Length: 234
Ligand SMILES: NC(=O)c1ccc[n+]([C@@H]2O[C@H](COP(=O)([O-])OP(=O)(O)OC[C@H]3O[C@@H](n4cnc5c(N)ncnc54)[C@H](O)[C@@H]3O)[C@@H](O)[C@H]2O)c1
Image (cartoon, rainbow, N blue to C red):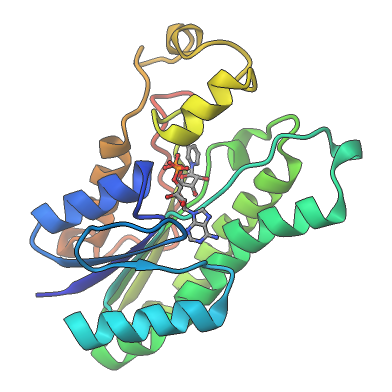
């Protein structure tokens, strides 16, 4: 049985991905800043390489080498660019981009040894459209898309595919927090009226895309950015 690691697996999209992969028959371990009682849940900050390495070594001891990685840990910041401190900017980049760097670099040796691997990076539809007051987040997520493409070219010859899924408007604690704070540019209901498929996305919609990209059927798909956004971005 293959072993998958899902970062940000304690909430929202990451949690749905972990549940889906469990039901698809993979061993699943999660890495999250938040503590969890779930089996194989490891508390680690993805910006802390030593913590990532420790958690992944524990996963290897429990479940064997890692052949699947889904990077879903992420944070957003909502500030006008002129009010953004460099520390704010760096923190957002640290979690959303550098966290992906650490986790990918830490698991790649297992995948290279196995001659098989799947990496899916959860970026954001805002990297396609831009988003006011979210410049740090959009910059970091755009970089994740670029990193995805380069890694796909570098590791394709070793049997490893690397793709990104940029979600748009998915009903998670992150989205609801933005709504509560008036940062969504309208209510969820108003957004639904402007969404071509006329509903909010569910974390399970993202999990389904990840499950496909991880499957054997997707072995010829790499370096792609697969938007899952109800048609809000095309
Ligand atoms: N919800 C949406 O509409 C939407 C849209 C675009 C992109 N995304 C992206 O999808 C991913 C999941 O978002 P979500 O909506 O499920 O949010 P969420 O807040 O519900 O979950 C994010 C998880 O990441 C964890 N996390 C945050 N910082 C971490 C760190 N430094 N180390 C380890 N774990 C950390 C949190 O503890 C949390 O469990 C994020 O990367 C987010 O940017 C979400």
